[in-house]
Image (cartoon, rainbow, N blue to C red; front, side, top):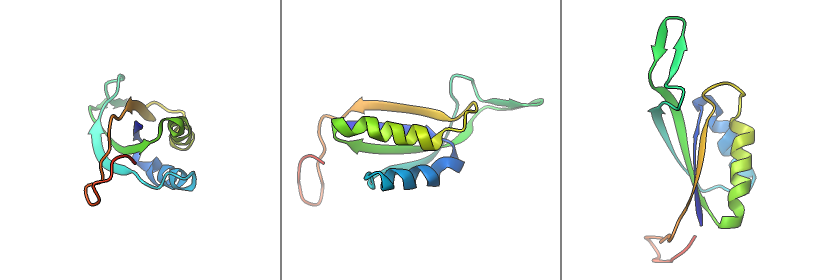
Length: 105
């Protein structure tokens, strides 16, 4: 299993979530977060914004599905401007459903 964590622009949240759902990935977790990337924030004129609002989407899928999730997020969340976000993919060793005790997705 793989966990995909995508930090995206808030204005791209709905479009990205709907695209993931349409591609067969309805289960996700989202957080509204603040942070900065390697550019260290954003400077507009003389004003420096140290931390910017982002939405963190987390999706756990089978290994072979991970590239498709990444492709959907890259396609729908991209504006071409600095601050579009970042996607991290990491391994998930186990998943357990609390209600049923089932192991796996």
